[in-house]
Length: 530
Image (tube, rainbow, N blue to C red; front, side, top):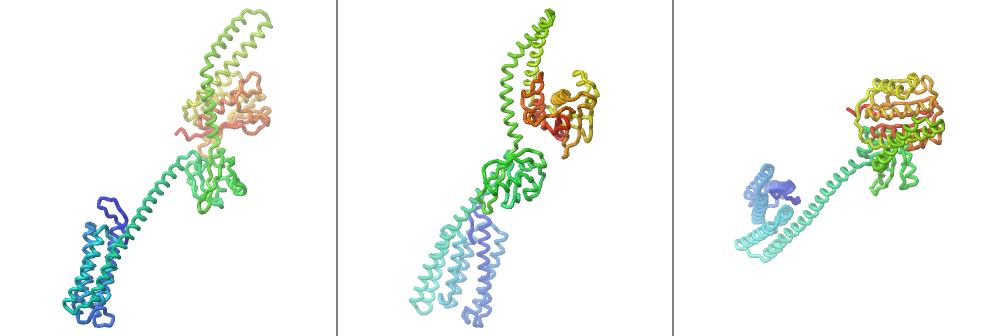
């Protein structure tokens, strides 16, 4: 029956009216009981005197009708809250006073009903109206007792009892009002805290959804209770319902099991089986009642890309400052060397000049390759049909590099379309073919270009395989490092540039096992250009 605080235009919320309906429901039940008691005026169960039976029946009938109308009115009329409450309380005071008079005064016990009515009004009502109701009830009881004393015998005990009831009216009204105010304050505090908690949950949910790290919520048994969209992308999930962690990643489940045995803050390196991404997982315990565990997943590739961006930015600033200063002297050295070659001063002189010119050209290639790295982010990706593009590329390559046309063989299967910047694709494939030809036996079919679909929809793989000696184990870790080369005239930037340009186009260049020679694989997508 308590009404909560509301700050709407009318000042009364749905809870106010619901409390008033409960109060009127109580009144309706009391009216019904009094009506039944009036019907049984000749019975020993009647609380009324027999000689006033007809008056009691009429009064309780009217009271029952009034409470019924009040209940029906509350369902349709939601205005003038205080007026309706005052009408209900004053009606109760009038009816109970009349029943007390005809029932023998306060000795009939009906004065207690006024205490209940005032208590209910104190819980439902507001402000000074509660004291007004108590004052009206006091005046009614005192007036009834005075009228009885004037009409019948004067009894001092009756006035004493009326005084005690009057004090009780005010005590009950004030106590109910103070209790209602305290409960209302607690209810408002709980409501405000509920609003704050809801807002905090919304903010936290938004922050988790926008996090660059994937987040999993695990139970102690390894059950994945919740994950954010970033975790779905990192693990390669697509709306996967909650299930055991081992169904997401067996390596991640093993890391979680090891962490439970020996908790530590160190990250665990895992590879997602569906997305193929290399991840770092960090397990963090919580203080929740079920002792859930948070798992933060971070893309190692993104970290490497950020480090690479910093390195490229520094390299770009360096090359921008020195490229002009290097190329001008190189051009002068090359031009002077060409002029001196024309003088024909002897075989030794020409051999030394050739060494100078070859190294000048090597420096020129290094500068060109470094400058090419600065343009890796200028990727204009398009859908390249490899069945058409690769034969044209090979025609150009064999002419410029002066190699036999049958050394490289093409193999196609699947969709054979790749989303890539065309100039970047040309540069990557040129570097890979140059590396393959340099280490192959240079016979028919020594180098194989194989195009096939990947393990997932939209994934395309381009394999470059030669029949050379392959890559030794001690060189595999260094093969993509800048300026690492095993060739006397190489710059050491070819494979490094190929991998950087592949990553700039959302692809991945990897060195596979020897088959029997070096085996490089470009893994890209065909559905990202749509």
